[in-house]
Each structure stands twice: as structure tokens, then as C-alpha cells.
Image (cartoon, rainbow, N blue to C red; front, side, top):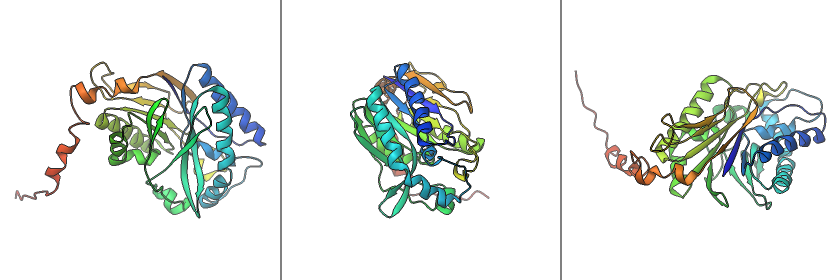
Length: 292
């Protein structure tokens, strides 16, 4: 299959029609290159709140405003997925979960089915300034394209979540990300590469770009698209299948076979996936020895 992942820059629009026209152009570009799955970044959905005259709000107020536009944002992608016959990982935004606000991304099928993954571990900015809440569970989506997991940005920096998804059958994990400065981008990018090695699977990162004036949540943004794999037989020795240019808003479209990329789990040079449990018993009791 072909996967299209983008580095995407949200922007202010005079009206809703301007936003939907932009999304139509982006989806049509990727679908026109034969993409089966389109991946948009974390807080890409914040663009649905950037309608009308720009105005400055607090991060917590932005979270509320984004949540108010979440349903309409998803509906646009449902229509585009159906029109172009593609699966879309919708750019995440804040959404209501009962009386809580979470950071949510949706996976939409061409038939109009919609599932979602909420961010499980929040950054200090999200906890303290946006005042949003963590998701309740990790999921694996069984699709016509295979079993897919989603780790939203900071989630990728914690190995047990990816591990649980892969143990549940995922051989492809999508990482929509939003990092304000190069240090954050390095953390997420290197974490994605580590998750690909540990789980011997395909990891696809899609970053949001800034700056977006008058929007504290998207005030800064840097990154580059990355398709990462285990460096093993028949795969790139650096573990990078493809990547985009830093801070370049564009699609990167790659033909991939996640099952072939996961093949080293069975016959690879190393067995990170199958040997995972061997680290457990020896970590139960750490010995502290004095050498003075």
C-alpha cells in the first residue's frame, strides 16, 4: 500500500469554506499519487478553530475553542475519505470526552467508519496550561490496510504503549506530532526510531508546523516527516525508509508493506520483539554494589 504523511501548517481562514477548500486540495494531492492512507499531524485539527478574525486566547481557552469545532472537523474528513476512497488519520485536536477535554485523533475509513485514539500521556504544557486530560485506553485498529496503532507525539517517548499495541497485532504505528523547537522534534523523532527497533515494525511520523500567529498552542512548530523501520535484512541500514525536508509543508508518499517490514521479528539479524521478555526477570531486583 501507499502511505502519505505530511508536514502540515495550520493557518487562519476567513470562513469555513476556505478551510475545507484547503483540505480538499491536500487530500486530492495525496490521493492523486495513489495513497491509501493519509496521515495528518497532532493539533492539525486546531485549524478548525482558526476561523474569522485572529484573536489571542489563553491555552486553556484555545482547548475549549478547539473542542467546539472538533465534530465539524471530523465530518469534513469523513466526506473527503469517502470521495477519494482513502483512509485518513485526522489531525488531532481537543475534543470532549464527557465533562473532560482530551487531545484526540480519528482514523476514518472510505466507508465512513470513524474510530479514535486519545493522547495517553500529556506534556506539562497540556496539563498545566491547556488543562486537558489524558485518554483512558490504548487501541489497535483492525482495518482493510492492516492493524494500526496511534501514538500521539509524547506518547511515542514511552516504550510500553507501543509494545502493547504491537503485542496486540499492530505492525504499523502512526505518530502525529507537534513539537515547538528542535529539541522536542529530536526527542520524538529518536523515540520513533527506537520504537521501530524495539518492535521491529513500521513507524510513520507526521509533524505540525508553525508559526501560527495569535494561537498560543501553535505559536511554534518544527519537524520533518519520517518513515522508520528496523535496520535489518532487506531494509535500510539507518532505519529510515523515507523522510521529508525539515519545516517543509508537503506530503511524503511511500509504498510500503508493513508485514514485510515486520518480517525481522521472525528471521532478522536480531530478535528485539521476541526477546523483549528477557529483560524483565533481571530487573526485578537491582543490585547496588559499592566500589570505593
